[in-house]
Image (cartoon, rainbow, N blue to C red; front, side, top):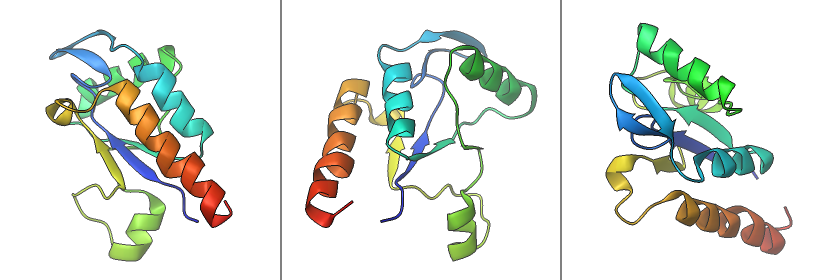
Length: 124
């Protein structure tokens, strides 16, 4: 079974929104992202930040012990499948714009059932 690809927004999702500055981490963001990494998910930071602003976000994440596999780019698997394009391909998109029903606790529970419980039934 292929690992899940998870696309995550930065401002308002991982860090509280204070564009162009970076405010503190949102509750449970670090825990859930590190748990997804532990469960072998591929994490892509999918943000409007670029250049210096993207570098500031990277430094913030590393300083806080959060690591991504890709930054504003598709995974190697998706590039092999579809070629390289601007749209980030993922199995799950986490963004503050869809946090109406999503929050980090819900993401953790959802992904636990997607990965761990499903894995029990498909031999993962």
